[in-house]
Each structure stands twice: as structure tokens, then as C-alpha cells.
Image (cartoon, rainbow, N blue to C red; front, top):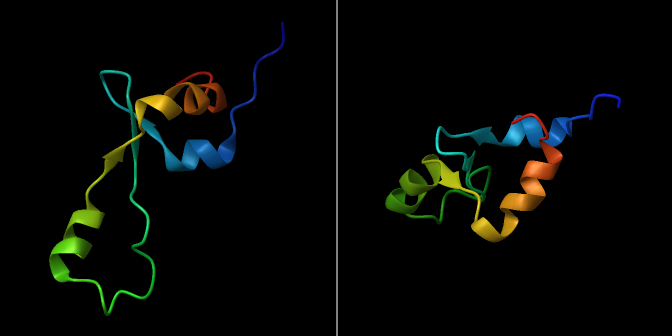
Amino acid sequence: MPKMKTRRAAAKRFKVTASGEFKRSKAFRSHILEHKSPSRKRNLRKAGLVHKTDHDRVSKMLPYA
């Protein structure tokens, strides 16, 4: 059986935690920041986790993660 290919786009966006969950960065932080409150922008800096309903989808894109 040949090696499975990793989706490079997914590999750049997700990291695996020690418990097997996927870490991700939050959206809406790239532009039009003037009208967003400082607390909202501060919370967008923190990493989020991929929801459990999307976990299988992400793990198929990252077969060796």
C-alpha cells in the first residue's frame, strides 16, 4: 500500500494537541479591525479547537497526525 498524502493546506492550518484534538486559529482577524472592540480582537488571538462534528473530516485530511 502506498503512503497516503497529507493535504498541505490542512497541515498549515491545524496542529494536534496531546489529547488528540485539533488546534486552529480563529477567523475575522485579518482586516477591517477598526470597528471591532479591543476585547474581541484580543479573544481572536487565542487558539480555538475544531468542533467534534468536523473532527473526522480534519483527521482524514491529516492521516499521520
